[in-house]
Image (tube, rainbow, N blue to C red; front, side, top):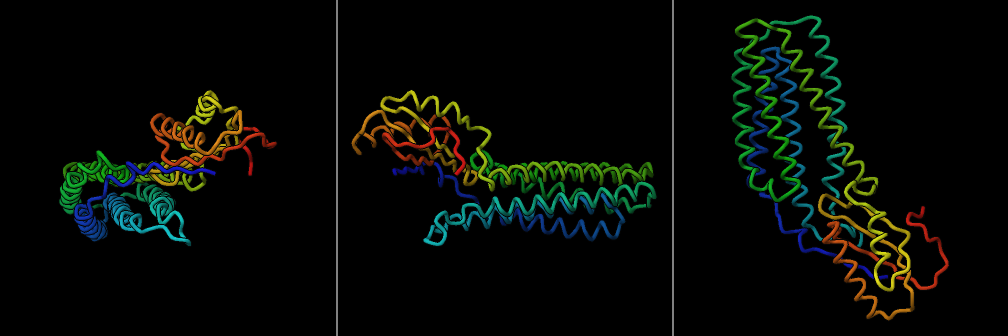
Length: 304
């Protein structure tokens, strides 16, 4: 069995720990202020936005911890190291986020049926604070977001949270000048739906990775067809493709050769396979089992 690893782009983009820490502290302050303000003012929308800010805090902390863990070396007990720490945490956070969002929807419906007067001035000022805080965090993470998938996720999360705070501000102004108290429940309902949408997408993506599903961008049939056209290769079968984390996609397969080639010849062909799969499909870990005249199942997918 021969195995090759393409590491050229895996560790080129390090997370900016200082900016992440600043964003974490800002969002903790915003969350605490919104929880206190929501309880004092009676605004459910402010409390739901506080929940969203708290999810930002968790997301940023995960990115920071994952950045530290991923640098730890693999060992005999952890041959992959901690490369899936972020994926597992994302799965847990997405699950709890959806549950809390559903509870918010139930509470919003109850509050809509019995609207309560809300201290709109507090809602307005706290939403402005949240907009400014999240806006600053967005600027801090913007540069890294263009080169790192994790940072891009955190950046988009903070950007959409800033937009949710804008919605709360609009609601506060409507309550202050037009006494439309039911708008608080409506905004809570909409923010909760947004949380479910974000949470479900994250839950679906993390589940696919944890279940070792083939990434949506990888056409297995096409890869096998093209590899079968390589010189001296007669059949490619028993294929597995999975995503280890956000940066690593693994490909392994059994390859039948037309003749009993030498190891030197195999290395030349293996290098061609690696280069082709990496540059064409961005698969950076290739594991090939060479075979000649072996009697086994030749199906592309074989249930182990």
